[in-house]
Length: 102
Figure 1 (tube, rainbow, N blue to C red):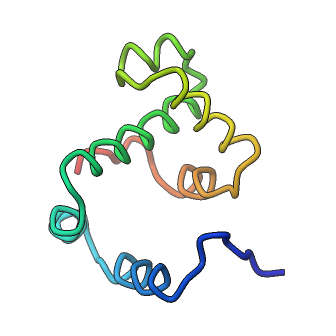
Figure 2 (figure 1 turned 90 degrees about the vertical axis):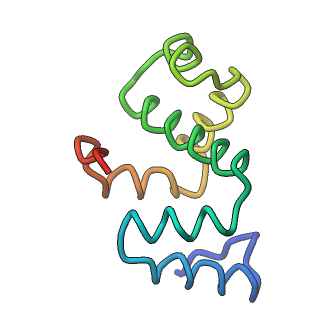
Figure 3 (figure 1 turned 180 degrees about the vertical axis):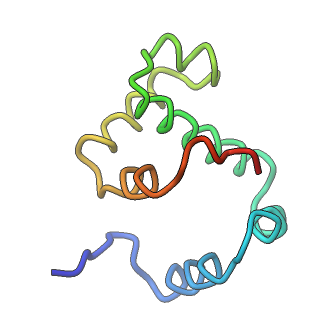
C-alpha cells in the first residue's frame, strides 16, 4: 500500500521532483538558497541536526546545549521519530553520519 501524505498536492509534487533532480551538495546549496530564507533553512537544518542527535541517543539537555533548539522542538522531533511518517528514519538509515564533511 502506497503512503498517502496529508500534504500531497500538485505543487508539493513539483517541489519534490525539483529536489530529487539535484545531484550534489553544491546544487542543494544553490537551490535552497534561492527557494528559502536564511531563517527557514536554519530552522530546518536545526531540526535535522536534532533528529541526528536523538538517533545517537543524546539527552534533551545535551541536544538543547548543542543546537539551541527548544525542548518543545526536540520533543516534537522525538515524537516524529517514534510515531511519525518515518521520514526522519528513512533518511537517517540511508546517510552515513561520518560523511557530513560536505
